[in-house]
Image (cartoon, rainbow, N blue to C red; front, side, top):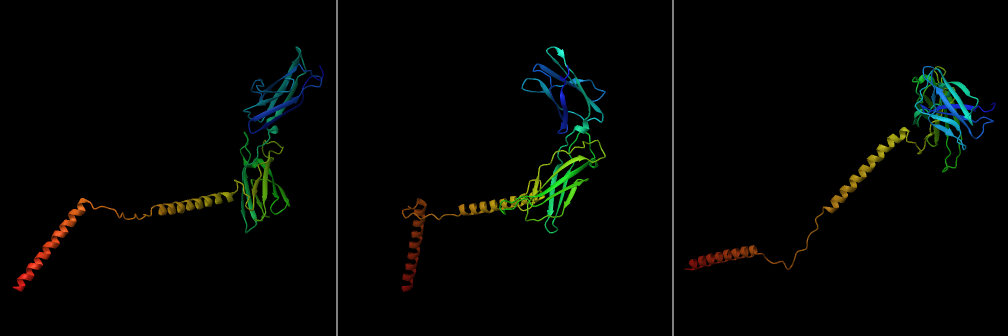
Length: 291
């Protein structure tokens, strides 16, 4: 019956190997209408049915999720048919070049290195990840640099730089260390390879300038070792001071009631005997001299 076939069939490949296909139910489709999706990535393969359907509130299939999709350079074939109360409905067929429906991932490892003296910042990155493109020359990029608002200085965004470039680096020549900036980048087809002509996803904004730096900025790579060294030195000094303070010997008061040991008595008796003998010898010598 007319109006029972699906409408607005769309497929998107994202995150390299995942694919979602969605559709709207037919205009005359009833609640008991059910749809089934079959697809064939290339002519060399057989038709296979969707294993992970997306459903609406009525339980009708309105989409399918695929995993481990490999982009081929040929058309993929899609077929959606169905039934309603045991009766067949209109089927829907479509061929799609898979690379044209890929949503490119953001460019990877966006890095910023600024030189205050020259008022320049070198920005570079790596191409987005794909399952079928390996050459850097396959992409071109859009880069957006914004002068960020600063609540402490009561300033708003004052400038915005946009550029389309064909390599994976950019030289920003309006840098001021007293301002804050953010940069984001996205990729598309460079005109030389089988890449989607649509713009891909934006990279996560990277901030630079003043003291507000992201983890991807080289400034942090120098800042972290310095902080670690300072903390280590502080701990060493503190530990040495503590050990020095606790190692000082506290003098013990003498015990006025300390009793002499037996050894002390023996020593004292020997000294007394020697003194008596010496006195007797001296006395004897004096007597002899007198005679």
